Length: 84
Image (cartoon, rainbow, N blue to C red):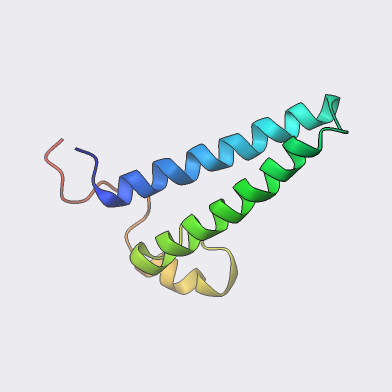
């Protein structure tokens, strides 16, 4: 079973991919209002998930005011607590 931290990271990546994919679609279908609404809803979901991740596990990057906190916490790619 995937732990909560990895599950949250996977959800963040999936939503970010959906946003990127919709942007590519909108390059050729710029009048598609439904796709534009989807982008906005996915952006909202992405920032909600990102905020949840930051509150539970700390920032994913050193960008912004939380740079020192990021440097002091385990890096996102460090797999802690696993025997794999």
